[in-house]
Image (cartoon, rainbow, N blue to C red; front, top):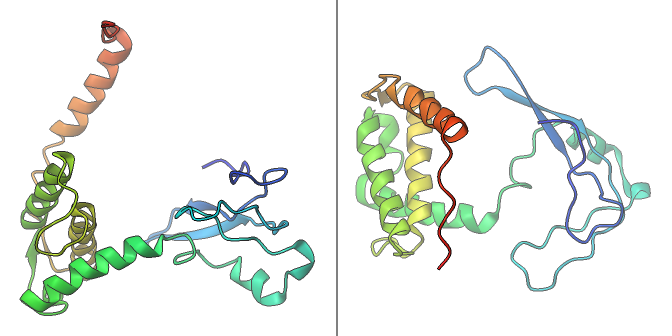
Length: 190
């Protein structure tokens, strides 16, 4: 990511928000560092919108804790809470069925959760918004599957039965090349 400012809709003079540059590290999870943070005047909020940006503090209100916090990675302040709540619902249903954190006690196969992920995405893409078992979005179930895969991989509980052929990457690269050398025809107008 370049170090250019990110602008919030309705903001005056495009206030900067915390920008992050990934730093390559030897540990598996990596670290992130703040490259820039400037607190500007409050942003005019869009009333009733679920995407309303939080009001920013005026520059003179910055205190030492704010400056110290700017040096730490943002985690919850950039995560939509309602998404975390839906994923929590999916994880709660799984905990009731199989036991909380059961995936840390016994190794789990990557293919099992890949299949679940693909089923939920297929149902969502087919127009079915919510999973009947959990009552929340199929997309939250897909995120839960990814969460379990990440956790199992990080804790050494993943049975890595992925295909690992490299064919998918080669195919994607070849198809991208075709789009340049042999573009798709323009759509016919009705």
